[in-house]
Length: 268
Image 1 (tube, rainbow, N blue to C red):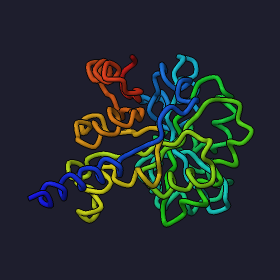
Image 2: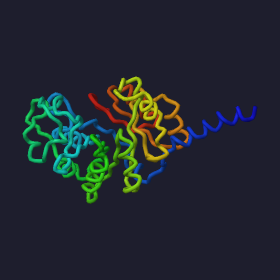
Image 3: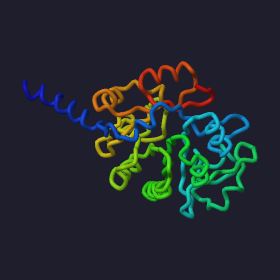
């Protein structure tokens, strides 16, 4: 009888330990209290992840979230998708481009072109904090993460790095433990992600946290009510980041619950 009680108790303990994170990174206090414009403050005239959207976020006093890809020449560009089609109308992927080609692609039918990560850093220059998403693809997680960290070495402002790929976060834990790192995730069953069911369960429930020890977990807001999120935030004290808030009511709820807000399509 005791064995039958010990087995579930042991499994519960292992689950609790699996979702642990790192709490109280001193830099987190400087990231709290800000509203973060998702891919910049974009609209019909200022495309997402464009210099115009980032300038607008700065002018309105918002922090910003942005996405970074590794180019084939080792430089870094800012764009959400790997495929160019949705944002530029062109075929191909951004990872196959070199720096000189970025200005050949127009964003959303405007005169805005794909920014270099370096250009965004020079624009912001520490004026507002940044949430920087690492867009790993094709096994380039180490090269991408290292290149981003190297470019940030002399950056004067506050920032954190996040990724859906736990390998990026694990690389940061091993090689740049000083940097604030966050695990992006969601309920992959609800979002119908094209991946094996076991992988959906692992990522949804954050059971790789014990390997990556994230300083924060960035969770899709409408999927946030999971057992793992409760354990991560309430037991381990890990900061939550809510993406992406598209209404004032969701924003108010997220802030009341203690999430750092990433917003889009309205202004808090």
